[in-house]
Amino acid sequence: MTSLSRRRFIIGAATTVSAPALLNGRNICAPAFAQKASDEPIRPPSPLIKRVVSSPPNTYFTYPHSNGFLPDGRAVLASTPKTGPGLDFIAFDPRTASVEHLAYVRDTRMYYSIAENGLMLVSQKEGAAVVDLGAKNPQPRTILHEPNWITSADNDISPDGKWALLTRSRYVAPQNYRCDMVEIATGRIKNIAAPGWPMDHAHFSPYDPSWIAYCANRNGRDPQRMWVWNEERAPRGRNIFRQQQLSGKFFHIGHERAMFHKPAMLVVAYGTSSATPRGLYEVGFNGSVRLLSESNRDLHCNISRDGRWAVVSLQGKYDPGDARPPSDWLTSGGNFGYLDVMVVNAATGKRIFLYRGTSSTAGQPYGVQPSLSPDARWVVIKDSKERCTLFLEVDQHELNSFLS
Image (cartoon, rainbow, N blue to C red; front, top):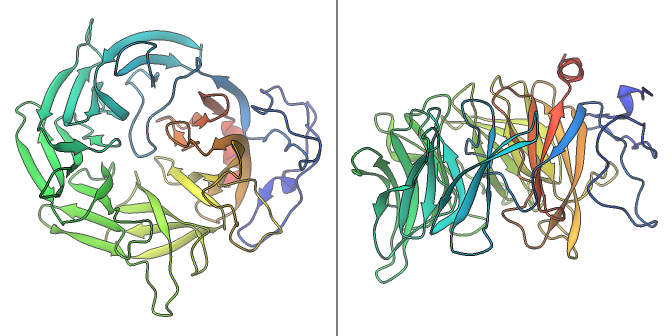
């Protein structure tokens, strides 16, 4: 197997390198689409990737802060059936590419979340339902139905499968907003927050599920974007990061993800921020802030369970010579654009290229939105042009070498 110097792949927080121009012949899938002759050279395969496994067409993975894996290691994917409102759910094993149909659920919204016991939560327009994916013939069971209250598309279930976490908005007068826990066995509602503004991205902290993370979603530049809640230590919610700085400059942040190994959030400071440095940050539940890795193009992020490495998607191609925020941030400039995925060493901030996918103006549910399998063997992304989920098998030896 032809090898290339690792120095040509590794990108430090303040260094600039040039990508090699040719493929190095590693036995993995080619990029998901062909480039025009006028484009910059195709990136070589990453030394971190052993192989790329594609899901069946028109199937997608869930939102990055939710678990989408069954206890046996298979991934659950959703697809829109040819007839009827709702979603089909399948179990896909990237190790063998085997497929098993699990359930069809009517009136579902886009994303879903799976507990450690295999119970799946699905959002519905005016409530939510659960499906026991371990049952022989799983059928959805409604746990909440409240007319005139619309449930957001990306909610969460507690790791033990006892509670659903839902952000909701009343779409008739008087307009209101809520973040609620719903006891799955009884349907009992426990209100977490009702602040008078839209909320989003609610999820349990996997480190300590008594903590709940959510965000203000009044607009993309809400000065009090990130919040956490705990019944004893923050019963009224706690804003943990203010985007408006004393200098008058602004951190435009989002795509929060609670960490597995500590009470903290992984978050992106977008390229549209007037404040610097932009990039990947760690924000503690106590409000502490630490820059992990600088970048002007970070979009979605996720982190390993041991906290040693993160994965982040870039809006557009990585451009080591561009110190400015990208002019096309959050747009593709056409039907499809490039979207690079990087692995980040959480201790040093160094980055290494992983994969080049495609984004589109259509966005969800085929935005790249990287996730990790529980065993950290697979990085899971979605590709807009291919309209499928890609499972990138990580070479553990190369990964450990990069992290050492």
